[in-house]
Amino acid sequence: METLGEKIMEKDLVSIVMPCYNGKRFIGESIESVINQTYPKWELLIVDDGSTDDSINVIKHYQTDKRIKLIRQSNSGSAAARNNGIRRSKGQYLALLDSDDIWKPNFLEEQIRFMKEKSAICVYSSYAMINKNSKEILKPVKVKDKITSKDMESLNYIGCLTGLYDQSKHGKIFFKEELNSILDDYAFWLDIVALENIAYGNSKVLAKYRIHEGSTTNNKKKLIKKHYVFYRTYLGQGRLHSLINVVKWGIAGLAKFN
Image 1 (cartoon, rainbow, N blue to C red):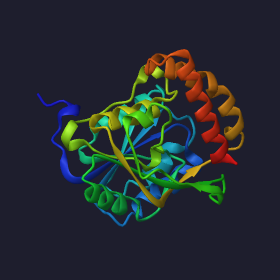
Image 2 (image 1 turned 180 degrees about the horizontal axis):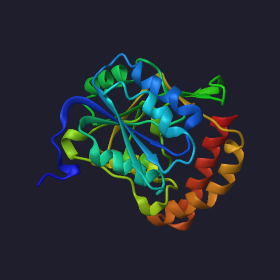
Image 3 (image 1 turned 180 degrees about the vertical axis):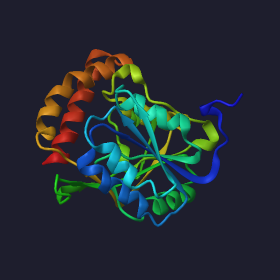
Image 4 (image 1 turned 60 degrees about the vertical axis):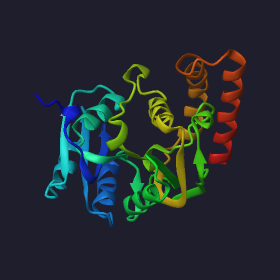
């Protein structure tokens, strides 16, 4: 019997997985950024992770578009929510968009064109940063033109909202739920880049990442130890190597948010 993970992938279809937990305030804007895509062949799998606000009613408002599917689960974390969506995805391509981030209208069209141009299974792009009022702040994050697995062992160069993965060659890749939604996006893209040891960066700014008050400072402090543990355990790096990479990550963060 066919399982969710074994469904035949539909050529040229993009499966977009959007986890949501109490995302009422911004999710409408995120959904609209998908609906407004110039590339029309997509499905949006919104996985509600046990929201207690009015997120469900906001999502249902947009379900007049039959490409939008709502999946509900008890609160299990973003990694489990994303995996739930990935299992149900039917598309050749996989993209991830959080319920507070935004794509520019040409995101999918540009990324698919770029992927075909590079004959790649994974591409990503530059992105802008916005505040709670959707106003652009700071400088856009400009990406490297290409990265390898070796690069990814130091830093996660792929902004999750900009990554596009072609599932047709190597199959579906899932998030590591045992990481408890801490750096699981880093592990996810690292695993994908490792499939062919390369991914390509589109220099065009095609998406907008939302910065929430306090996140640029408080979360950085909390994540220092998490990054060190990630380098030591998930990547199996030595103490000195791990410390050097934590410093690299900190410098990159300062450059991004200042």
